[in-house]
Amino acid sequence: MLPLERPVLHARWSGEAAWMPLGPRLALDPENAKAYPQPGEILLYAGAISEPELLIPYGACAFASRAGALAGNHVATLDGSSPTLRELGELLLWKGAQSLRIDWAVAKSCRARDGVVAD
Image 1 (cartoon, helix red, strand yellow):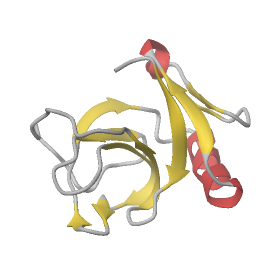
Image 2 (tube, helix red, strand yellow):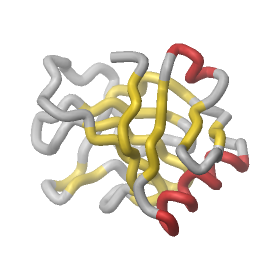
Image 3 (cartoon, helix red, strand yellow):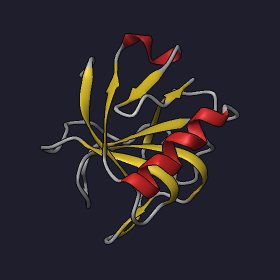
Image 4 (tube, one colour):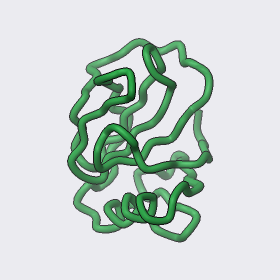
C-alpha cells in the first residue's frame, strides 16, 4: 500500500489520535490486534465493523468508532515522545484535515501539508 498519500483527520471517537480512511475493506485478519495503542503506534484496521483506516495516536487513545470498540494491527511505530507528533495532532484538531504521505521512509518521518513532521 506504500507510498500512501491521503487526508488525515483528527479522530472522532478514539481520543488523542489521527485517522486516515483507507477506502474499501481490506482482506486482512487481526494479528495481535490492540485497542489501546501508545503514542506513535500506528494501527491498521481492515474494516470488519467500521471502515478501513490507519490510526495514529499522539496521546491517550482508546481505539473506537460509532459502532463501538475496535482493535487494529500494530504495523509501525513513530517516536511517540517526539513533540512534533503532538504538534501534528493539535494541527488536525484546530486546523482540520491535512494531507499526509507515508512511505518506506516512515521510520524517518511523516510530513503533513502545513510542514509538521512526526519523527
